[in-house]
Image (cartoon, rainbow, N blue to C red; front, side, top):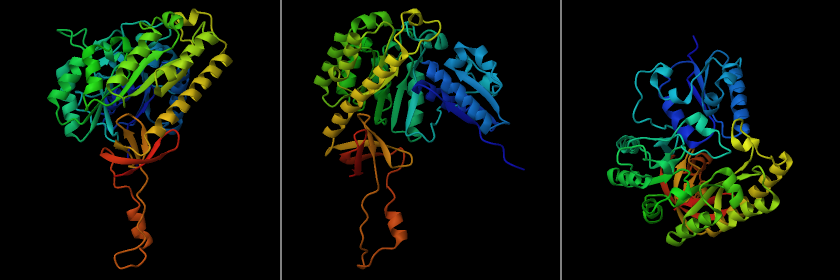
Length: 423
Protein backbone atom coordinates (compact mmCIF):
# COMPACT_ATOMS: atom_id res chain seq x y z
CA UNK A 1 0.00 0.00 0.00
CA UNK A 2 1.34 3.42 -0.92
CA UNK A 3 2.01 5.81 1.96
CA UNK A 4 -0.28 8.88 2.00
CA UNK A 5 1.23 12.02 0.56
CA UNK A 6 2.39 14.63 3.05
CA UNK A 7 0.38 17.83 3.55
CA UNK A 8 1.50 20.70 1.33
CA UNK A 9 1.17 24.45 1.85
CA UNK A 10 1.68 26.75 -1.15
CA UNK A 11 2.34 30.36 -0.18
CA UNK A 12 1.90 33.44 -2.33
CA UNK A 13 2.59 37.03 -1.35
CA UNK A 14 4.02 38.63 1.74
CA UNK A 15 6.16 37.58 4.69
CA UNK A 16 3.06 37.60 6.87
CA UNK A 17 1.56 34.92 4.63
CA UNK A 18 4.78 32.90 4.98
CA UNK A 19 4.57 33.14 8.76
CA UNK A 20 0.92 32.11 8.75
CA UNK A 21 1.61 29.24 6.37
CA UNK A 22 4.02 27.73 8.89
CA UNK A 23 1.29 27.88 11.53
CA UNK A 24 -1.14 26.20 9.14
CA UNK A 25 1.41 23.52 8.25
CA UNK A 26 1.75 22.62 11.93
CA UNK A 27 -2.01 21.98 12.15
CA UNK A 28 -2.45 19.67 9.17
CA UNK A 29 -1.23 16.40 10.66
CA UNK A 30 -0.75 13.60 8.11
CA UNK A 31 -3.75 14.32 5.89
CA UNK A 32 -3.64 14.28 2.09
CA UNK A 33 -4.32 18.00 1.76
CA UNK A 34 -2.97 20.94 -0.20
CA UNK A 35 -3.50 24.45 1.16
CA UNK A 36 -3.02 27.45 -1.12
CA UNK A 37 -2.43 30.60 0.95
CA UNK A 38 -3.47 33.29 -1.53
CA UNK A 39 -2.47 36.89 -2.16
CA UNK A 40 -4.58 39.81 -3.41
CA UNK A 41 -2.10 42.67 -3.46
CA UNK A 42 -2.35 42.96 -7.27
CA UNK A 43 -4.40 41.44 -10.07
CA UNK A 44 -1.29 39.48 -11.05
CA UNK A 45 -1.14 38.00 -7.55
CA UNK A 46 -4.74 36.81 -7.90
CA UNK A 47 -3.94 35.27 -11.30
CA UNK A 48 -0.90 33.57 -9.78
CA UNK A 49 -3.12 32.14 -7.03
CA UNK A 50 -5.52 30.66 -9.60
CA UNK A 51 -2.62 29.19 -11.55
CA UNK A 52 -1.16 27.66 -8.38
CA UNK A 53 -4.52 26.05 -7.60
CA UNK A 54 -4.76 24.49 -11.06
CA UNK A 55 -1.19 23.18 -10.92
CA UNK A 56 -1.76 21.72 -7.45
CA UNK A 57 -4.89 19.88 -8.56
CA UNK A 58 -3.09 18.35 -11.55
CA UNK A 59 -0.21 17.29 -9.33
CA UNK A 60 -2.36 15.97 -6.46
CA UNK A 61 -5.73 14.91 -7.99
CA UNK A 62 -6.84 12.99 -4.90
CA UNK A 63 -5.94 15.55 -2.24
CA UNK A 64 -8.31 17.88 -0.46
CA UNK A 65 -7.56 21.33 -1.86
CA UNK A 66 -8.23 24.26 0.44
CA UNK A 67 -7.74 27.94 -0.41
CA UNK A 68 -7.19 30.60 2.23
CA UNK A 69 -5.57 34.05 2.39
CA UNK A 70 -6.49 37.51 1.17
CA UNK A 71 -7.69 36.67 -2.35
CA UNK A 72 -9.92 33.90 -1.03
CA UNK A 73 -11.31 36.22 1.66
CA UNK A 74 -12.03 39.19 -0.60
CA UNK A 75 -13.72 37.09 -3.30
CA UNK A 76 -14.64 33.79 -1.67
CA UNK A 77 -17.38 33.03 -4.19
CA UNK A 78 -14.97 33.14 -7.11
CA UNK A 79 -12.67 30.56 -5.51
CA UNK A 80 -15.52 28.41 -4.25
CA UNK A 81 -16.68 28.30 -7.87
CA UNK A 82 -13.40 26.82 -9.12
CA UNK A 83 -13.83 23.11 -9.89
CA UNK A 84 -10.41 22.37 -8.40
CA UNK A 85 -11.26 23.81 -4.97
CA UNK A 86 -12.85 21.74 -2.19
CA UNK A 87 -13.06 24.39 0.51
CA UNK A 88 -12.31 28.06 1.23
CA UNK A 89 -11.11 29.24 4.65
CA UNK A 90 -11.28 33.01 5.18
CA UNK A 91 -8.41 34.90 6.82
CA UNK A 92 -10.14 35.28 10.21
CA UNK A 93 -10.31 31.48 10.49
CA UNK A 94 -6.99 30.50 8.90
CA UNK A 95 -5.16 30.20 12.24
CA UNK A 96 -8.07 28.67 14.14
CA UNK A 97 -7.13 25.02 14.85
CA UNK A 98 -10.72 23.84 14.26
CA UNK A 99 -10.47 24.98 10.63
CA UNK A 100 -7.85 22.28 10.04
CA UNK A 101 -9.13 19.55 12.33
CA UNK A 102 -6.62 20.33 15.11
CA UNK A 103 -7.30 21.08 18.77
CA UNK A 104 -4.47 23.49 19.66
CA UNK A 105 -1.97 25.74 17.93
CA UNK A 106 1.57 24.48 18.60
CA UNK A 107 3.99 26.99 20.13
CA UNK A 108 6.52 27.66 18.85
CA UNK A 109 6.04 26.81 15.21
CA UNK A 110 9.48 25.62 14.12
CA UNK A 111 10.04 27.04 10.62
CA UNK A 112 11.94 23.89 9.69
CA UNK A 113 13.85 24.42 6.47
CA UNK A 114 13.96 28.21 6.90
CA UNK A 115 17.12 29.99 8.03
CA UNK A 116 15.16 32.90 9.47
CA UNK A 117 11.92 32.63 11.41
CA UNK A 118 9.01 35.00 10.78
CA UNK A 119 6.92 36.10 13.74
CA UNK A 120 3.57 37.78 13.25
CA UNK A 121 3.13 40.64 15.72
CA UNK A 122 0.41 42.64 13.96
CA UNK A 123 -2.35 42.07 11.42
CA UNK A 124 -4.85 44.20 9.55
CA UNK A 125 -4.74 47.91 8.72
CA UNK A 126 -6.70 50.97 9.84
CA UNK A 127 -5.61 53.07 6.86
CA UNK A 128 -7.28 53.09 3.49
CA UNK A 129 -4.76 53.78 0.77
CA UNK A 130 -6.74 54.28 -2.41
CA UNK A 131 -4.94 51.49 -4.34
CA UNK A 132 -5.05 48.80 -1.67
CA UNK A 133 -7.55 45.96 -1.23
CA UNK A 134 -5.71 44.27 1.64
CA UNK A 135 -7.81 45.82 4.46
CA UNK A 136 -10.83 44.08 2.89
CA UNK A 137 -9.01 40.78 3.36
CA UNK A 138 -7.30 41.46 6.69
CA UNK A 139 -9.64 43.77 8.60
CA UNK A 140 -8.64 46.48 11.06
CA UNK A 141 -5.29 46.64 12.81
CA UNK A 142 -4.75 44.38 15.81
CA UNK A 143 -1.61 43.54 17.75
CA UNK A 144 -0.20 40.44 19.43
CA UNK A 145 0.56 41.06 23.13
CA UNK A 146 4.28 41.46 23.80
CA UNK A 147 4.40 38.53 26.21
CA UNK A 148 3.19 36.13 23.54
CA UNK A 149 5.68 37.56 21.02
CA UNK A 150 8.59 37.16 23.44
CA UNK A 151 7.54 33.61 24.29
CA UNK A 152 7.36 32.70 20.59
CA UNK A 153 10.77 34.20 19.83
CA UNK A 154 12.42 32.57 22.83
CA UNK A 155 11.13 29.20 21.66
CA UNK A 156 12.44 29.78 18.14
CA UNK A 157 15.88 30.73 19.46
CA UNK A 158 15.90 27.61 21.64
CA UNK A 159 15.09 25.62 18.48
CA UNK A 160 18.21 27.00 16.80
CA UNK A 161 17.09 30.06 14.85
CA UNK A 162 19.64 32.87 14.76
CA UNK A 163 17.46 35.48 13.08
CA UNK A 164 13.84 36.48 13.61
CA UNK A 165 11.83 38.83 11.40
CA UNK A 166 8.88 40.72 12.88
CA UNK A 167 6.03 40.81 10.37
CA UNK A 168 2.66 42.50 10.01
CA UNK A 169 0.40 44.24 7.52
CA UNK A 170 1.09 47.69 9.04
CA UNK A 171 3.93 46.87 11.42
CA UNK A 172 4.55 50.39 12.69
CA UNK A 173 0.95 50.65 13.94
CA UNK A 174 1.77 47.96 16.52
CA UNK A 175 0.34 48.38 20.00
CA UNK A 176 -2.31 51.09 19.76
CA UNK A 177 -5.01 48.53 20.57
CA UNK A 178 -3.19 47.02 23.57
CA UNK A 179 -3.36 48.18 27.21
CA UNK A 180 -1.02 51.11 27.69
CA UNK A 181 -0.67 51.56 23.91
CA UNK A 182 2.93 50.30 23.57
CA UNK A 183 4.74 51.10 20.33
CA UNK A 184 6.80 48.94 18.01
CA UNK A 185 9.87 50.44 19.64
CA UNK A 186 8.68 49.25 23.05
CA UNK A 187 8.18 45.76 21.65
CA UNK A 188 11.65 45.66 20.10
CA UNK A 189 13.21 46.81 23.39
CA UNK A 190 11.37 44.10 25.28
CA UNK A 191 12.44 41.39 22.83
CA UNK A 192 16.10 42.42 23.03
CA UNK A 193 16.01 42.52 26.83
CA UNK A 194 14.09 39.30 27.46
CA UNK A 195 15.65 37.17 24.69
CA UNK A 196 19.35 38.06 25.10
CA UNK A 197 20.42 34.98 23.12
CA UNK A 198 18.75 36.25 19.92
CA UNK A 199 21.62 37.42 17.69
CA UNK A 200 19.68 39.05 14.85
CA UNK A 201 16.32 40.85 14.81
CA UNK A 202 15.00 42.18 11.51
CA UNK A 203 11.87 44.23 10.85
CA UNK A 204 9.70 43.87 7.77
CA UNK A 205 8.14 46.82 5.91
CA UNK A 206 7.78 50.04 7.91
CA UNK A 207 5.68 53.15 7.35
CA UNK A 208 8.30 55.87 7.66
CA UNK A 209 5.88 58.46 9.02
CA UNK A 210 5.34 56.22 12.08
CA UNK A 211 9.01 55.70 12.95
CA UNK A 212 9.24 57.54 16.27
CA UNK A 213 12.42 58.48 18.15
CA UNK A 214 12.47 55.26 20.16
CA UNK A 215 12.29 53.05 17.07
CA UNK A 216 14.73 55.30 15.19
CA UNK A 217 17.31 54.93 17.96
CA UNK A 218 16.94 51.14 17.89
CA UNK A 219 17.28 50.99 14.10
CA UNK A 220 20.43 53.10 14.15
CA UNK A 221 22.07 52.24 17.47
CA UNK A 222 21.29 48.62 18.38
CA UNK A 223 23.73 46.12 16.85
CA UNK A 224 21.28 43.20 17.16
CA UNK A 225 18.70 45.08 15.07
CA UNK A 226 19.80 44.51 11.49
CA UNK A 227 20.98 47.54 9.47
CA UNK A 228 18.22 47.16 6.90
CA UNK A 229 15.06 49.28 6.73
CA UNK A 230 12.35 48.56 4.17
CA UNK A 231 10.07 51.57 3.74
CA UNK A 232 6.56 51.66 2.33
CA UNK A 233 7.17 54.69 0.09
CA UNK A 234 4.96 53.80 -2.93
CA UNK A 235 5.73 57.00 -4.88
CA UNK A 236 8.05 59.99 -5.03
CA UNK A 237 5.62 62.67 -6.20
CA UNK A 238 3.60 64.64 -3.66
CA UNK A 239 0.39 64.87 -5.69
CA UNK A 240 0.44 61.14 -6.41
CA UNK A 241 1.08 60.46 -2.72
CA UNK A 242 -2.00 62.54 -1.84
CA UNK A 243 -4.09 60.68 -4.42
CA UNK A 244 -2.83 57.42 -2.94
CA UNK A 245 -3.95 58.75 0.48
CA UNK A 246 -0.47 58.23 1.88
CA UNK A 247 0.43 60.21 4.98
CA UNK A 248 3.96 61.33 4.09
CA UNK A 249 5.52 63.70 1.59
CA UNK A 250 8.50 63.13 -0.66
CA UNK A 251 10.63 65.48 1.44
CA UNK A 252 9.80 63.55 4.61
CA UNK A 253 10.97 60.29 3.04
CA UNK A 254 14.25 61.79 1.87
CA UNK A 255 14.83 63.44 5.25
CA UNK A 256 14.19 60.17 7.10
CA UNK A 257 16.69 58.28 4.96
CA UNK A 258 19.27 61.03 5.42
CA UNK A 259 18.82 60.83 9.21
CA UNK A 260 19.08 57.04 9.21
CA UNK A 261 22.27 57.04 7.16
CA UNK A 262 23.83 59.88 9.12
CA UNK A 263 23.41 57.90 12.35
CA UNK A 264 24.20 54.43 10.88
CA UNK A 265 26.07 54.88 7.58
CA UNK A 266 25.98 51.21 6.60
CA UNK A 267 22.20 50.89 6.86
CA UNK A 268 20.61 49.53 3.67
CA UNK A 269 17.35 51.02 2.41
CA UNK A 270 14.61 49.02 0.73
CA UNK A 271 11.32 50.40 -0.57
CA UNK A 272 8.09 49.60 -2.39
CA UNK A 273 7.38 51.83 -5.41
CA UNK A 274 4.31 51.67 -7.64
CA UNK A 275 4.72 52.58 -11.32
CA UNK A 276 1.88 54.06 -13.34
CA UNK A 277 -0.57 55.02 -10.60
CA UNK A 278 -3.71 56.66 -12.03
CA UNK A 279 -3.16 60.26 -13.27
CA UNK A 280 0.64 59.86 -13.15
CA UNK A 281 2.24 61.90 -15.93
CA UNK A 282 5.87 61.79 -17.03
CA UNK A 283 6.96 64.56 -14.64
CA UNK A 284 5.32 62.79 -11.70
CA UNK A 285 6.98 59.54 -12.74
CA UNK A 286 10.34 61.34 -12.92
CA UNK A 287 9.96 62.24 -9.25
CA UNK A 288 9.47 58.58 -8.35
CA UNK A 289 12.36 57.58 -10.63
CA UNK A 290 14.67 60.04 -8.86
CA UNK A 291 13.63 58.66 -5.47
CA UNK A 292 15.83 55.59 -6.02
CA UNK A 293 18.94 57.76 -5.92
CA UNK A 294 17.60 60.36 -3.49
CA UNK A 295 16.72 57.69 -0.91
CA UNK A 296 19.64 55.39 -1.83
CA UNK A 297 17.26 52.46 -2.39
CA UNK A 298 19.26 49.25 -2.83
CA UNK A 299 16.46 46.75 -2.17
CA UNK A 300 13.65 47.96 -4.44
CA UNK A 301 10.30 46.22 -4.90
CA UNK A 302 8.75 47.69 -8.05
CA UNK A 303 5.06 47.09 -8.75
CA UNK A 304 3.25 48.08 -11.96
CA UNK A 305 -0.08 49.53 -10.89
CA UNK A 306 -3.11 47.35 -11.52
CA UNK A 307 -6.63 48.41 -10.53
CA UNK A 308 -8.23 46.44 -7.71
CA UNK A 309 -12.01 46.23 -7.82
CA UNK A 310 -13.72 48.29 -5.14
CA UNK A 311 -10.79 50.61 -4.46
CA UNK A 312 -11.01 54.38 -5.10
CA UNK A 313 -7.96 54.31 -7.38
CA UNK A 314 -9.73 51.92 -9.75
CA UNK A 315 -12.21 54.73 -10.51
CA UNK A 316 -9.52 57.33 -11.24
CA UNK A 317 -8.26 58.09 -14.79
CA UNK A 318 -5.99 55.17 -15.64
CA UNK A 319 -2.53 55.28 -17.22
CA UNK A 320 -2.44 53.14 -20.40
CA UNK A 321 -1.12 49.64 -19.60
CA UNK A 322 1.82 49.84 -22.06
CA UNK A 323 2.96 53.05 -20.34
CA UNK A 324 2.63 51.42 -16.92
CA UNK A 325 4.72 48.47 -18.12
CA UNK A 326 7.38 50.75 -19.57
CA UNK A 327 7.65 52.84 -16.41
CA UNK A 328 7.93 49.75 -14.23
CA UNK A 329 10.74 48.47 -16.45
CA UNK A 330 12.56 51.80 -16.25
CA UNK A 331 12.26 51.83 -12.47
CA UNK A 332 13.56 48.26 -12.24
CA UNK A 333 16.50 49.13 -14.47
CA UNK A 334 17.44 52.12 -12.35
CA UNK A 335 17.07 50.09 -9.17
CA UNK A 336 19.30 47.31 -10.52
CA UNK A 337 21.99 49.78 -11.53
CA UNK A 338 21.89 51.48 -8.12
CA UNK A 339 22.04 48.13 -6.35
CA UNK A 340 25.02 47.02 -8.46
CA UNK A 341 26.97 50.17 -7.53
CA UNK A 342 26.21 49.57 -3.85
CA UNK A 343 27.30 45.94 -3.98
CA UNK A 344 30.59 47.00 -5.61
CA UNK A 345 31.38 49.10 -2.54
CA UNK A 346 31.15 45.97 -0.37
CA UNK A 347 33.86 44.04 -2.25
CA UNK A 348 36.78 43.44 0.09
CA UNK A 349 34.70 43.76 3.25
CA UNK A 350 33.79 41.08 5.77
CA UNK A 351 30.09 40.35 6.19
CA UNK A 352 28.24 38.30 8.78
CA UNK A 353 26.06 36.00 6.69
CA UNK A 354 23.06 33.94 7.78
CA UNK A 355 23.49 30.78 5.72
CA UNK A 356 20.46 29.45 3.84
CA UNK A 357 19.84 25.98 2.42
CA UNK A 358 21.65 24.14 0.97
CA UNK A 359 24.63 26.03 2.44
CA UNK A 360 25.98 27.83 -0.62
CA UNK A 361 24.31 31.20 -0.09
CA UNK A 362 22.80 33.51 2.51
CA UNK A 363 22.10 37.11 3.43
CA UNK A 364 24.33 39.61 5.19
CA UNK A 365 23.09 41.86 7.99
CA UNK A 366 22.31 44.55 5.40
CA UNK A 367 20.29 41.92 3.48
CA UNK A 368 22.71 41.76 0.57
CA UNK A 369 22.58 38.28 -0.94
CA UNK A 370 25.91 36.47 -0.62
CA UNK A 371 26.96 33.40 -2.60
CA UNK A 372 29.25 31.06 -0.66
CA UNK A 373 31.01 28.79 -3.15
CA UNK A 374 33.24 25.99 -1.81
CA UNK A 375 36.74 27.01 -0.76
CA UNK A 376 39.56 26.27 -3.27
CA UNK A 377 40.78 22.68 -3.01
CA UNK A 378 44.42 21.99 -2.02
CA UNK A 379 45.79 19.68 -4.74
CA UNK A 380 48.51 17.96 -2.72
CA UNK A 381 48.06 15.58 0.20
CA UNK A 382 50.29 15.27 3.26
CA UNK A 383 52.28 12.57 1.42
CA UNK A 384 52.86 14.80 -1.60
CA UNK A 385 50.54 12.76 -3.80
CA UNK A 386 47.53 13.99 -5.70
CA UNK A 387 44.35 13.54 -3.74
CA UNK A 388 41.63 11.22 -4.93
CA UNK A 389 38.46 12.47 -6.67
CA UNK A 390 36.53 11.36 -3.58
CA UNK A 391 38.72 13.51 -1.34
CA UNK A 392 38.29 16.45 -3.69
CA UNK A 393 34.52 16.04 -3.62
CA UNK A 394 34.49 15.99 0.17
CA UNK A 395 36.79 19.03 0.38
CA UNK A 396 34.66 20.99 -2.07
CA UNK A 397 31.56 20.84 0.11
CA UNK A 398 30.90 24.16 1.83
CA UNK A 399 31.49 23.88 5.60
CA UNK A 400 28.49 26.10 6.29
CA UNK A 401 25.17 24.73 7.43
CA UNK A 402 21.82 26.38 6.88
CA UNK A 403 21.03 28.49 9.92
CA UNK A 404 24.67 29.23 10.80
CA UNK A 405 25.94 32.80 10.97
CA UNK A 406 29.39 32.90 9.36
CA UNK A 407 31.96 35.60 8.62
CA UNK A 408 32.58 35.86 4.88
CA UNK A 409 35.18 37.89 3.00
CA UNK A 410 33.63 39.37 -0.14
CA UNK A 411 35.75 38.71 -3.23
CA UNK A 412 33.57 40.07 -6.02
CA UNK A 413 30.04 40.81 -7.13
CA UNK A 414 27.90 39.58 -10.00
CA UNK A 415 26.07 42.89 -10.03
CA UNK A 416 23.04 41.53 -8.20
CA UNK A 417 24.69 39.56 -5.39
CA UNK A 418 28.01 39.29 -3.58
CA UNK A 419 30.36 36.32 -3.78
CA UNK A 420 32.37 35.54 -0.67
CA UNK A 421 34.48 32.95 1.05
CA UNK A 422 33.97 31.91 4.64
CA UNK A 423 36.75 33.50 6.67
